[in-house]
Image 1: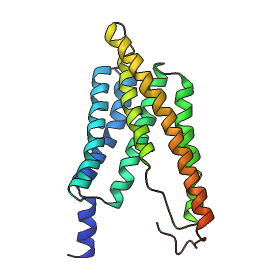
Image 2: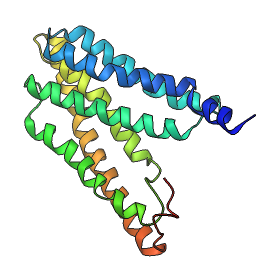
Image 3: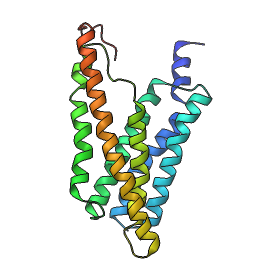
Length: 201
């Protein structure tokens, strides 16, 4: 098989298709929440996102379809969903603005570490299980908080469980971020600087 065919086989995979589908749901969710305020359909989009988030990782391992593109698409989709949801719920006043600020702030701080990683030939470090646990909590929290933006027993229960997931998710999100920063610090201390020519993309 040619190098080009191998590269194409690594791109056109089921997990990558699922991640791409998840990305397409980001603007759809924002439109549903901020435009017609179709919360039921917005919840459905979030549920589909959660299912595809699980499936793309599971199928990548099960079908041995891991790829460099998939390693980028999956976390990017997660980050964009979290960003879209907190902005949408913040504008709807479902969540306070300190939540809207504190989550992207963590990602912004980690982006500042990327230039330091590149001096050692890395563009990123492997995702830690704490980061996946944080994302899991947040992706469960936000649909429940949206469902809790109403009246009745179901809305009250959704609000309680939603904030439980949200608080744990925010704590784990920052914990994972601090752990990532510590890993970068150790990498800088234990590896030699590499030239831009030698650095991996």
